[in-house]
Length: 204
Image 1 (cartoon, one colour):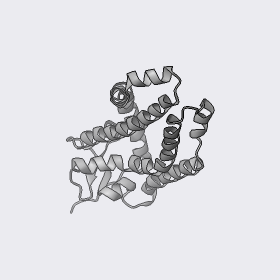
Image 2 (cartoon, one colour):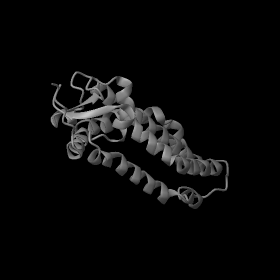
Image 3 (cartoon, one colour):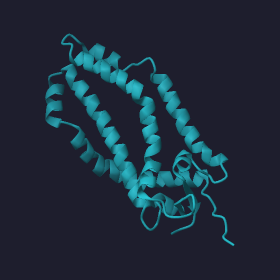
Image 4 (tube, helix red, strand yellow):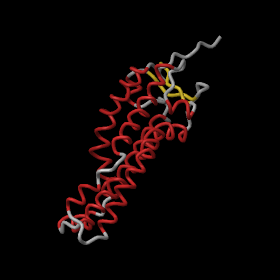
């Protein structure tokens, strides 16, 4: 008779996330993110615009930051998915905590399953933030076309009527997403439910 797997608790998974942040996150920020930002930013054009104190420089800067943030999140998800698809079926943090990722039937998860698992929440948060980003982007674009726009106008463009609501909604979604682990029998978070994965104790 096959024994039932023991599913990883919230605090075990939380500790694994923290460890991954230290083991993978620091090198990612120091090495990979600068490469991503070098792709997202037109450094020469940005420097020229910022030195001229033209509002268009801030429009270019904001656009580049958004692009770099999206590329960074997708690259992070790809990296975690590739690691999870190895023989260990675990990131370094999970390996240390002696847990691994499986599909709902206990088998090895596929790459796309892992990628979507790691990318789902960031994509959801970015989607929630889209109206606010569009509002800022539109304001900056209008000022970039307006030669009389001042720095005070620029500062006001980053204040949106829905900023507080968007931040609160993102916070609630993140809390709900991971709080599911504490209440569901198989300790599944939002991404586990959506993509049929489980985190169980043991080592591969």
